[in-house]
Length: 497
Image 1 (spheres, rainbow, N blue to C red):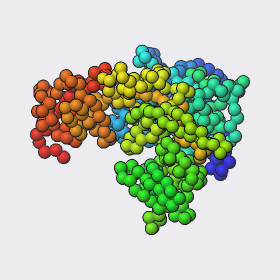
Image 2 (cartoon, rainbow, N blue to C red):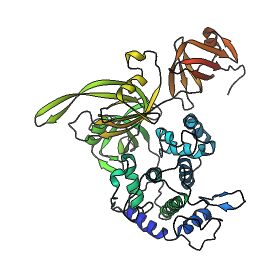
Image 3 (cartoon, rainbow, N blue to C red):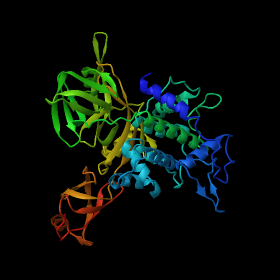
Image 4 (cartoon, one colour):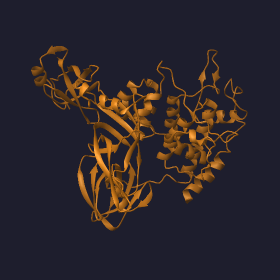
């Protein structure tokens, strides 16, 4: 256990006992709790302004300790604990995704923050609200997932050996590591039978405990000066090619550069030292590696801090390939199917997809044949045109001689149809638009598409002349096959900044 982990554990154990049982009983229903002792945590979160309850019909302040807490409320609490303020630019960036998943307006700030910080993903939004528009109660394993990813982003690591739960096999793979993290920190623990009960919902009293202990942990980190100011890296981007003495970096601003690695230069993966061969193995077999690079006065890389980037982007194709693996001195060849994902930076990677891969579209499980139909790869669906995006959990095989190494464990698919964007290019068959972050999206035009300029219907020839590329904003309508049926553009006759 490293020194920081020891400090974490000592601070958490100390802070966890500081909840004042004698705090003023603010809530009218303070004694209506699921277990004795919950009052102290409830009063604590109120005094800290983290959970303040609401006012009932009689004008009394109530906490509703036994009520379930929702996904959106959980994310709001994480946002409050972060102490950060999300910008309007970030909210606008994620507005379309939040709107399409019926996220309530009051939760836009917190949900946009969580999406931007990587605490939740686009595919997670699909479960936030029930089909009848009611708030969905959060489960224990999902609460651990959200709080765990938040704390991981804050640099928190497990502080003690993880003690397995008796029902550990029922915890979903994507949540398991965060359950371990929170249990090691004593933020979420099991019941008297050492069961975690991953699918049980979380009530407001239980959330008061989680929030109190998380806040105590964050405060202890501040007091121990664990949050250290880090210098800005000289370069940041994705490593695309590696040799013994250099590497190629695709920077976040769209440039491809080659940097020499010094003789004493060191790669780090998730904070741990890793060899050049290890980074080569990752980058050459489908793992998108994000890197912050520090160079010396000669421009030679001395420290390269890497992490595996989330597999997220547009589904740009499927196919079949031939791979191989070694068995003794023999090289065994085998066929496999792949799905190719193009990341937002324009780079593409292919991943194995097989009968054990779980495929979901709009939160419903589909099979490989339905995936082909969705992206228009079957003969019977020539007219289908949908921009299909994906978030994927990928399993990697780190044996150097195995190719390819990356296999889809679970992939969540969804479509992005921008309702409003800036026109980048247009012809008689398709339109290319830019979102608020400058990312390009291409949509095909329906044969009967209609064009409007300043509210008046026009021919496409006039439409193309009237709009200004990379400036004019367009409202877009689609049919069920994904083709554009109408474009509404506004022109400008003044001097724009």
